[in-house]
Length: 99
Image (tube, rainbow, N blue to C red; front, side, top):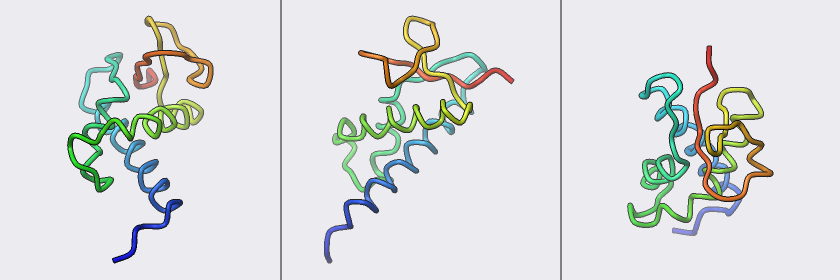
């Protein structure tokens, strides 16, 4: 069987990461944050990766967080302060937008 087209793989990873971020946040109390690595770990299998290959999904997880923040569905934070993920360097956290 041929390998999936790279663009399809990227779109699938993007969709899985967005879904996992929202799913994980829905399971937490309002105001609680998650790390993008949690979405990468939980979405690895759905992306056709082994459970130990989740690190390759970290860029997709950060990108998904950025898209969700642009859509005002989540906030991206560092040291408890909301940041623009495009400007953020180092570890970030993700939380639901207060309703």
